[in-house]
Length: 105
Length: 173
Image 1 (cartoon, chains in turn green, yellow):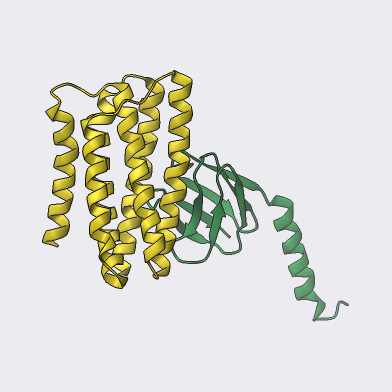
Image 2 (image 1 turned 90 degrees about the vertical axis):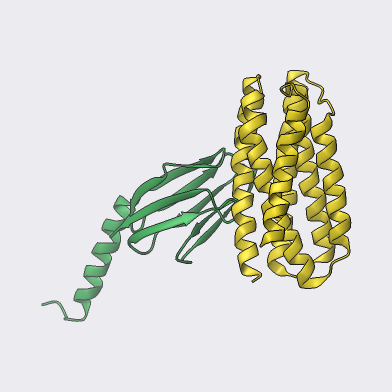
């Protein structure tokens, strides 16, 4: 019989494995001040990779303050999603660049 | 409020008026010159702000303006070189430059919070004026597709700066 205390650990490990097994990298581009796709969906554990194709610096900044990713000119930036929810984000330098990320559990 | 609005109107009518006063549509070499000059003006304004301001947010905004407009003007220079277009000075560019010089002289007399407010308010008005000139005059009249496309990107950048300036202006109140 398995000691009671190991059950949650096994459950957590199984969960972690299943998450990592399915973790994907989702690419979102910023080009000519347009975020594409403007609406993206991902899962907790996935990585978002923003590709800045502009000669300008951009940011991917969550409106709720949860994250703020700097994207220097012609560089990429990544973020591992930790919490579910629908998050609106924008570029702090060019607030007319807006997009939404839906993170599923 | 009245001062800011009238400044914006003056700037808008100036840009549009000067271009229209020529009686002819601006040519690509003139459009390139106007767009480049508009960038140079904003860099000069930002450099003045970097010397004068003690406000963290105003400083960050001014640094953003220098970085963005230098990057865009570098692209603009590369494009005119590629297209073998020589930017041509014109009345609109001259009026823009003269007004900007006057504005900097006016701002030079201010200090502290008064300077910060005047600089940021002018940035809002200036970007609005340039946006309007791009939309109504420069983009529709540009004939080269690459120049038009750069101006269209420029418009989005300027609109972004306008919103950014508005955020900073709101934080100063």
